[in-house]
Length: 338
Image (cartoon, rainbow, N blue to C red; front, side):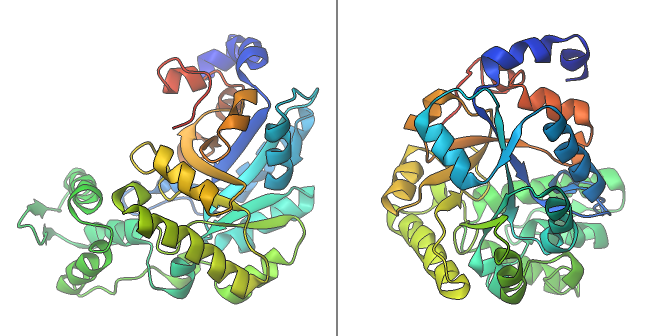
C-alpha cells in the first residue's frame, strides 16, 4: 500500500476504482490499542488516529455523510463531483461513547453504531476477547473435543488461540459457543467476562449517544451469530427481533443492518434477501471494497473499508479508500458484493 500511494498509482486509480465513495468500518476507538496476545489488536484504533482520518478526508473534499445520505446517493447511482465517506462502528463498544464520540462531535461528523441487543443485555459476551484472555492466562488448555495445547510461550499461546478460534467458529454451533467458553473459563478459575471498561454500551449509554442527530443506531442481530450457519427462520428472527428490541429501547426502528463477522463465510445472497424482506434499507458486510454505482442493485450486501489497528497510518487509509486495493483483495473485481 505504501508503494501504491507514493508511486501515484492509488491517486491515478481513484478515478476508475474510487466509485461514489466508501463506507468505513471501525470497531473500537481507545487510547490503549493493545491486546494480551496481539491477536485482537486489529479491532482497535486510537482516538488520535480517528481524528487524523477525519481531518484528512475533509482536506481531500470528501463529504462525510450519514448512512441515510450514503444510501440515497447509492440508490441514485449518480456520480457526484465529491465522493462520500460514511463512518460505521460495529458491536457497540463503550469506547465508542467515551473516546470516539468526542472526535465525531469535534468535527461534526455523522456516524452509525451497529448494535446487538444480546451483547447489551449480557446474553452474549465478547467471546473472542474472553478467549484471548483465557489463553493468555493458561499454561495448558484442554477443549471439550479432547484437543490439548501447551500455552507456556507466546508462540504456543497464539497457536492455541487460532486453533481455538477455528474450533469455536467451525466445529461448535453458534448456540454452543458461549456455554463451552464458560466451562473452559471455569476450568481456569476465570470469570467468563471482560473488564467493564472494555465492554459494551448499556441501554442508558446508547440512549445518550443516540440522542445526538449525528448518531444513527443500526441493527446487528440479537446474539451476534454467524447467520450463514443458521436456518432461514432463525436468520429472520435475529434480524427482526434485533430491530424490535432497539425500537422498544431507543424509540426508533433501525433502518440499517450489519452482518456479524460479515465475510463470505457469514453472509451471502440468502442473508441479503432476508435483510431486504425484513425492511432494512441497507446492509453492510466486512467485504473489502469501495462503493460503485452498480451497488444500487445490491443495497443489502455492501462492502466497507476496514480502518483497523494493523493499518494505523494515513497512507494505508488513503490507499484503501482510493479503490486501488479493491481488485487486489477480490480476485480482480471492481464491484464487490456477495
